[in-house]
Length: 326
Ligand code: CP
Image (cartoon, rainbow, N blue to C red):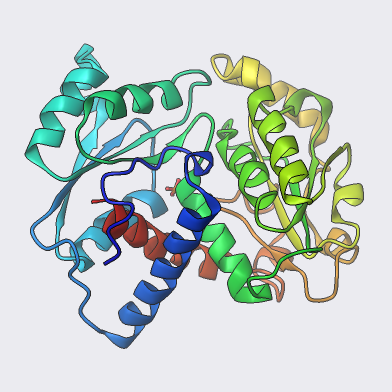
C-alpha cells in the first residue's frame, strides 16, 4: 500500500490535493477489483478504528465496519449518546485516549450547523492517529469521493464539459444535513465538471462553501452557477443529483423548517424533468431518499439511476481512505 498519506486526516476534500484525491480513487478502484475477485487485501491486519456516531447511519457505518474487517482490522462502534460524550467528555480527551488504543478515528457529527466540523478538527488536533470525517455540518467527503468514483466509472476520467445539476428537492422525513450538496459543489468544480446548483431562496448553502466552489471553478476553468428552478438546472445535464437539505438557521426548530418546505412540494425529480437532461444522463442520490417526494419511483428505479453502484462505491472508497491513512 502506498504510504504517502499515512497519518493524514481526511476532514474535507479541500484538505487533500488533486493528486491525493486521484490516489484515493485509484486505490478504491483497485480494492473494488480485489473484492470482486475474492483476492485477499489485508492491508490493515490487527489495526483498530474507532467510529464515533452522533447521528444515524446505514451506508457509512456499514461501509467502514465491513471495510476494516475485509482489510484485516476491526472497528469499534461508539454511539455518542451511550458513551461518556453524553456526559460532556471533551473531544481532546477522546482524541488522545482512543488514538492511544488504536490506529484511526472517524466521526459523524452532521446535524448541528457550526458544530460537527469544529468538533472533529478538535479531535484531530489532539489525536496522534488519522481522523476521517464520516459527515459533518460542512462536508461529507466519504460520500463525494464515492460519487466522483461513480461518475468516472460512467463517463471516464476526463469530465471536462460535463454538466452536473445539484438541486434541492422536497422531503418531509427530516431536515437533512447540508453537507452533501456543499461537498459536491466544492469537489466537482475541481474535477472538470460544470456545476449548477438549484434551490428555493430559503435553502442557500453555507457562504464559505459557496466561496470555495467559486474559487475552485476559477482555478480549474470550470463553471459554477446558481439557479432558482429544477428545470433550469436539469436542462442538458449529464448528471443530476436532486436531494433535500435543511435551512441553516432552523436546524434547532425542525417544525418551522418543515412548514416552509411544504411550499416547495413540486420540487420532485420525475420523468418530465429527466426528459430535459442528456439522453445518457445519470440520476444520483446519496441515500436514504424520500421516495415519492424527492424522487418518483420511476426515476430512482429507472434506467438513468446509478444509486446502487454509488452506494456500493461507499465501501471501496471507505476502504481506500482507511488503507491509505491508517
Ligand atoms: N449516504 C449516507 O451517508 O448514508 P448513511 O446516512 O446511511 O450513512
